Amino acid sequence: MRTLKTVAGSGGQHWGIYDLALDPNRSTMADAAVIAPRAEAARIDALFLADLLQFGNQGAIGAQEPLIFLAALSQLTSHTGLIATVSSTFNDPFSLARQFGTLDHVSNGRAAWNVVTSAFGEENYGYAEIPSPEDRYARAEEVLEVTTALWDSWQPGALRAGDGGAILDASLVRPIDHHGRFFDVAGPLNIPPLPQGRPVIFQAGQSEGGVRLGARFAEVVFTSLPTIEIAQEFTDRIRSLAASFGRPDRPLIFSSLHATYGATEEEALRLKRERIESIDLETGRARLEQMLGDIDLSEVKLDETIPASLLPSLDSIGRRRGRVEIFAAWARSGRTLRELIVDAQDTGHWAVTGTPEQVADAIEERYRLGVLDVVSVGDLADDTSHDFVANGLLPELRRRGVVGDDYRGDTLRENLELPLTR
Image 1 (cartoon, rainbow, N blue to C red):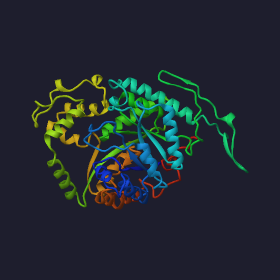
Image 2 (image 1 turned 135 degrees about the vertical axis):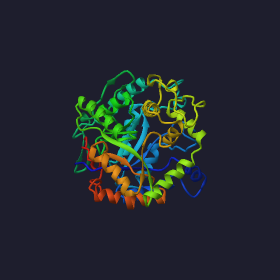
Image 3 (image 1 turned 45 degrees about the horizontal axis):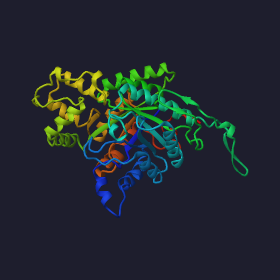
Image 4 (image 1 turned 90 degrees about the horizontal axis):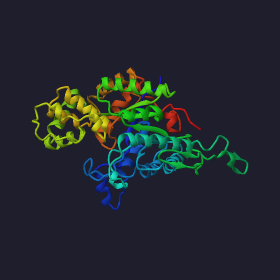
């Protein structure tokens, strides 16, 4: 049985990079330079970097370009995988194939692409409005068709070692001659074949279009699965669809875990209570409005439920449809506005409170049920969180045989127990 795989945030996207940007003695890589050795010492399989394409959309947060940031981070690591979030809506496939191919080379086979179709940022890329979800996912499918063909355009034996150095057989480097709805790409790719054959493909999205894209192309899907019931339904749905595409054992399921740790259960519950009490309810109302597709909740009292008439039809939602679906279902279940504001702090992700052993219980339950293959483990930059993860959670999961003791190989594919594609 494949062991559970672990991921941590790479750093590089938080308020602190503003302080780093003003410090002439440090770079904005400073936090990542702390996280990376901690991740490798803990044998965490990969570091993950999200992407934001607008200023202030999710708060005034610094967002550095993932591919450049992770290429730099590759030189501070030797085993941990590097997962870059990059939009298929605002980038062309030939550039993406070269960029991720180069990241795979400079990291010696540790690159992964988290494919997103982007819910925001269209005004920065020449669009008057965001394309519809259907068009964004259609484009994403074609982007993945083309990038895959480009990575595969070097046939086996095209580049091999000889007595006097590398021998290139150009007849085995073949054009792809792609002609589609969105792109015309001749190919072939003009960089050497990748160490992994192809980067590992992650994909984020749980709307209907996102599920289809993940079922067809993704090796790992990253999505919001706040309850076991939602996780089971999503896993069954995407794996059934993947099987129809001839992929019966894919994709792996990746959940983001928002853990509140304590040395005791009482301490963990106290920290959770303090966090809830510190919520600015009007700021929280605005955040929940966004989670529900930018509806107006100004007239709803905190301890009332949201009238069904205010909840949007999913067909009318052009951005983050999967997240809207989660929060709309919770609203219809009878949760009050106050309760939903608290829920919105975790943005629809899985949240667990307890000691490292109790958090391990929750993780193991999902892993044994087959609805969790990859999990994010927390903030390694924070000393307290790092201590709970590295000296509490991971040793406990290893004791139970859930997480492996060491890296399995040199590439990310080997460590995720995925086949090389070359």
